[in-house]
Amino acid sequence: MDIGTLLPRHARYQPDKLALVVGEHRLTYGELNAHVNRLANALLATGLRKGEKMATVLPNCLELMSAYWAAAKTGIVIVPCSPILQESGLSNLLSDSDTVFVLADSEFADSLERIINQLPGVRGGVFVGGRPHKRFPLFDEFISSTSSDNPPDAGLSDSDLYNIMYSSGTTGSPKGIIHTHYIRSMYCSIFASAFRMTPESVCLHAGSIVFNGAMLDLMPWMFVGCTYIVHESFNPEAVIRDIQKNRVNHMIMVPSQIIAVLNSPAFDPQALESLEMIQRLGAPLHLEYKNRINELLPGRFYELYVLTEGFFTVLDKKDAVRKAGSVGVPPSFYEMCILDEKGKACAPHDIGEICGKGPTLMPGYYKRPDLTEKAIVDGWLHSGDAGYVDEDGFLFLVDRFKDMIISCGVNVYPKDIEEIIIRHPAVSEVAVFGAPSEKWGETPVAAVILHKGESTQVDALIQWTNTRVDAKFQRISDVIIMDTFPRNVAGKILKREMREVYAE
Image (cartoon, rainbow, N blue to C red; front, top):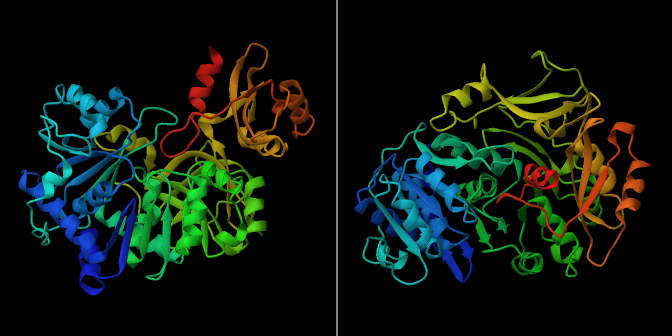
């Protein structure tokens, strides 16, 4: 299961087919393979070898896409890092991952100069764009004189590492999650099947491709050999325009992107008629928006629950209406159970911890056997997420246990309150978190983003919400009106930061 063999195969059998569109670049499979080979051979020429770590600090661009597939061919382990990381965070990731080579945007030249002086293990790198730098060469110069022939066979096997993906850190310090070539090959086939992707498909990805969610369509793209369009940054109007222009079939978006597209002045269901899949990724999408999609673009919405550590469920578009609110069922070869605090299986509709196993289960966290032992118990991955299954075995996500609010000794799940507040006509997005309370221990607080041009009084929104929640302990004590929410690169809302700011 060597994923490095996929691109050469397509280059041989369909060299003239359009493979990748990113920015101004339009590459066939033959052209993409040649470009990737030049990078792979240049990396090997520096002395990099199978198993060594190469970090990337890049936005969506051709160079990042090339790095993914050069790593696949050479056995070099790729460590994608977010370009919005602070200097200290980037330094920690480079150190923790044992990175020896860095491929970075030239905007990070000064930061990397300071970081690398403290990381003797980093022995080389390349900058993308900008002016020549005294420490590292520019990308075009780096690959200019190398061969476009396939690099030597790296002798890869199922168990060889392909990447280290660092967790988003929404509830603590990021952890390095290991994925092997076998795991990524499972992403190729399982998601291609689940999403009904074929060689004729056109896939558009407008979110960041540095986090694991991008692999849900990036890997099956290369597996089936279809066309992949990457936007360098997200713009809802550009997304709508490109879907219509290129007859896009498959699209994965985080909730904030879905909301932006639905609320765009350019939104028109007819412009999106070519879509066969709209897949929600990352943070939960409130039922209000799911219903809008199923009404305006019926038969297209897929729901997903996925852990980078290796378990997921899919709600097929055929079940999106009859099982509205569910995140689906495990695919073939996967198992799921809901466990209570004593480790016993919960009955249908009883809330417990979501646990699962399957062929994409990680070998572990990089250099953290202690954390691995806590996460994987007797072969079962423990998610830290609360959920339940209905009588048909469909999973319903309740919340992160770490986001759960305990008010007067009662468990309060923010998602239940959020589903109420999002119905308010002025509210575009909402996030509920717990704030300290001398009387109750904790009390729910709602942060909201309003629709453009809308307004509401805080007291009025509190009253509107508290007359509609199911129980007194769900009543919110305060509302914060915000222009934007703090998010990580995967688009997940950072409630931890909201709590810290509110506490100040």
